[in-house]
Image 1 (spheres, helix red, strand yellow):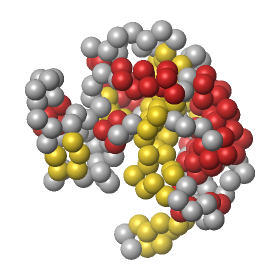
Image 2: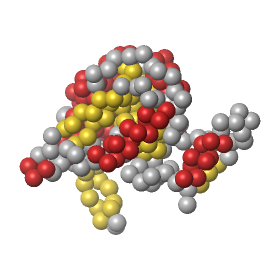
Image 3: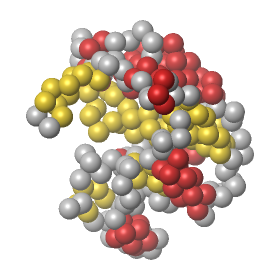
Image 4: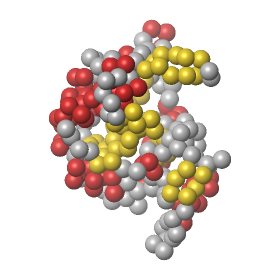
Length: 235
């Protein structure tokens, strides 16, 4: 069971009520390991006809301003905590921010960052941060409306364009500020659609689908300090 963390709280950001089932699932999983961690849900109003628009997702970059907590764990609604998060809390205290590199690590895929060769993209669906990261987080909030974050992608063989994304500005804010976050392994923001193999216990599952039951069994194996770490492939 995770220990109580003074000053820490968990922030969720959701658009309307369409993902409330995922949100409830995520909160229940978090409380299993950190039952005393305060939780704040920030709801972004939907537009006409209760439809989400691309620009409505930009408020995510303002999470440091929105959070009512001194120290914040931000979680997307489609995450499932599968173990205690104490290590990441400790690393965020030490470095100011802890998170994972995105499954696509190349931020230059965004139109506004084409010339920024090898610029690293982080996944902003799971972030642990403290006031030490204030500079980069507030810079992110400013840049999200000026960086061209449109990106071309292929969906079932058809080329499409995503017009807005908050992670482009986050990558550029990291670069401009020179901030050095603590980079957690993919087990802390596991994206099964792209991450097909892993070692050791999964700490945070990030997907709309439930994790396979055997993952909980695999996680339990590592409660034994003499456990042998093996690679696991998802089928």
